[in-house]
Amino acid sequence: MAHIHELIDFTVAVFIVHDSKVLLVMHKKQQKWLPIGGHIELNEDPDQALVHEIAEECGLEVEMLITKPEIPGEHRKSLFTPSYMDVHEINNLDYEHKHVGLIYFAKAKSDEAKLAPQEHDDIRWFSAEDLDNPEFQVQADIKFYSKEALKAANL
Image (cartoon, rainbow, N blue to C red):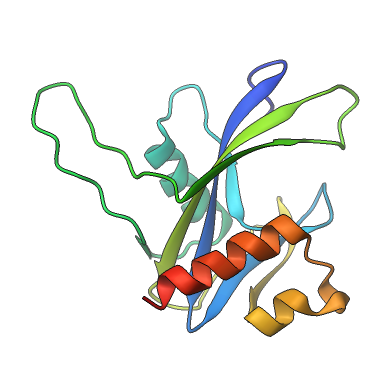
């Protein structure tokens, strides 16, 4: 989806783990390894964005590595709490733009991820060693969150 707001958009990112590996995609426009994720659309809450991004970008069935409390009361929905949040600049645009990132961790029920060719050039499961391999040029923040997801999945 295109950017909704002029200066800041809210996004979700989910680091999905299976068999001590984390799933990353080669983003078509940015040409770097990133987690599954995208913009929270105007008609979505963060949980709905997670569901649609996971289905659209890899097709995996996942279990979130966080719990949601059951909060009593009408007209209230509990949401998954992000494991981390950050704000980052998007540098490939002609104007200054930032994303507030809600970062989640999940476990996949299988390793049969499907490439979304309209959005990604590649999809790959990375071990901790792969993340550090200079061949893949995984940026520092993605390595950090990936390794945190691997730790969370092994608890």
